[in-house]
Structure formats: C-alpha cells, structure tokens
Length: 218
Image (cartoon, rainbow, N blue to C red; front, side, top):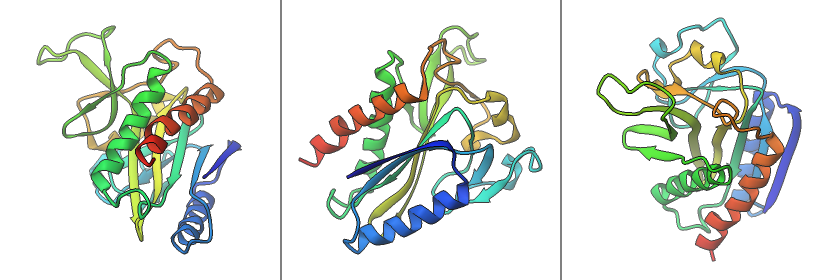
C-alpha cells in the first residue's frame, strides 16, 4: 500500500490520468494500492448526477465532467483531497460497506481534532452541527458540510475518494449548489476555530486509515 503526498497544487486532469493508469495496473496485479493526498487549484467537478441548474456561476472556475458518483463539488487550495485507489477484489466487493468505511475514516480523522462528524440520511458527505449558529426554520440545529465523498469503481478497484475542508476559501463554494443541497452551508476545520494544518490532517488520515481499513481487512 503506497501513500503519495503531493506539495503545491496538482492539475485535475493530470490527477485523473494518474488514477486511470494506476487503477488499471492494480486491476492487472501490476501495482500496489494507493492513497494520494493532494490539493487542486480552484475548480468545480460535475459527478454523474450533477444538475445544470446547480452550477450557479459557470464562468468562475474551470468545470470538469467527472465520472465519479455524486453531483457538483468544489476543489481548491486549503482542501485536502484523498484519492483512494483500493482493490475491492481483496476487500469483499461490498460497495455499501466500502462507502461506510470511507465515512468512518473521515469521522475518525475529524475526531483527532475533537470535531464530531456525522452522517445524515439523504445527504451525502460528513456534517458537523453548528451550535454557534441560529436554529433552522424547523427549529433544528444548523449543520454544515465539512467533507465530501465521491467514488468510481472499475473492475472492483476504486478511484476518486474524499475531500476534507481544512482552510479553503469558503466563498468559492458559492458558485455551485454543493452536492445539490441548498438548505445547509459549508465549513472547514479552521472556520470551526481550529488551528489545523494540512500536515496535521495528513497525519490523522494515515493513522485512522489503518484503524478503519486494515483492521477490517485483517
């Protein structure tokens, strides 16, 4: 299992080309599994369920069609993207379990910073309750999205993956309806008042990955 960590900003199309080649090599038994941690320049991606009306500012940043599941999402500086190239042939061929493991991984990594991430039925991604914001019109606590999940499988090898907002410009999300959800906002670890660096998040992701995935695969 290889961990690949890139400094600076990685071109989106170059990242997709790398994933395509690596997934093919993993499926052929010619390469190890890989998790790639990186940042992209500001851009929007459209998943297979993206609706045109959810791209509210199409001229703001480059827009890339993506074959991953999901709707529109934003990537940019200050957001840690983890591209996950894992061989589900060796991990049970259970897509629902795999998605649950990714969610558990994100939640465990956030817990390293005493942030309680939660899953909500009907809302993709990981959410945090905002006790510092007014209640919603239904009287419920406000919730913001802190992490996104979008996957694709080829020959039971995964690619694309997760993104966690560390310190992105949250205004950049305003050019889309993130994941098609209009009723809730977006937050980041720094927006929550935590002085967390990208290196801190990388350490948390590596530690908790082993706890979630390697124990399950033992």
